[in-house]
Amino acid sequence: MNDNHASPQSAAEIAREAQATARAHGFFQQWWFSLLVMALISVTTLLPHSVVDQLALQRDAVTGGEWWRIISSQFVHLGFNHTLLNIVGYLIIATAFREDVTPAEEAVSLLLANLGVGLGIYFFSLDIVWYVGLSGAIYGLLTHNLIVGYRRSPILSIFFGLFLAGKFYYEQFISGPDTATAAFIGADVAIDSHLYGAITGFVTGFISLLLFHRPHVAPAEPDRAN
Image 1 (cartoon, one colour):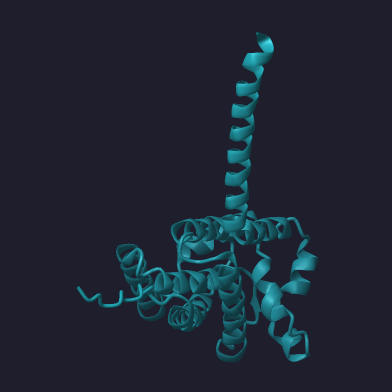
Image 2 (cartoon, rainbow, N blue to C red; image 1 turned 180 degrees about the vertical axis):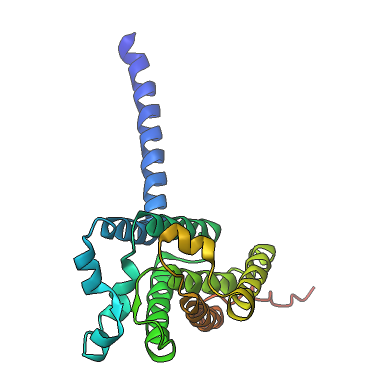
């Protein structure tokens, strides 16, 4: 009698384990890059300041040929508060647009935003001689996602889009850097990096929308004669 009852129970347990494994696999497929980025910037918080200084965007060092600082500077931060702020921002964006952007597209968009921010600071913001942080690239990823996610969630895209437009106008023409954020992270906020990131995300978003996010059109059924 015991053996007869054991088989159905074991089969149910196997089915539940298979479902749990499938869910975990699906979660990892969707989130692996986002988790990697958040883990990376968390780990770099533990680096001593001397190492952070070797990875930061220092204008004289970049001019001297250390071009890797254009990218590496954006994965190191000033400290725990600075890192926490960017992790929370990245998590919100990754969650809001998870269904619209694959990990591969997210990776390309973020890396291009990194490049756009780094080059923008180096060539156009000559007053910035030392820079670290991912916030500019995060704004680039957000702008990219707003564009490619518009068809599925227009209200969310419009809301974030209006927020960004108002924020950039307020920062660039009215108030300047956010003093509250500066006090929280312990340094001035490089608002130009946000603008460079958004411009890069705007370009990559429209390119991606035209090439990879076209609406699916079902093929027309052929006419049938009676």
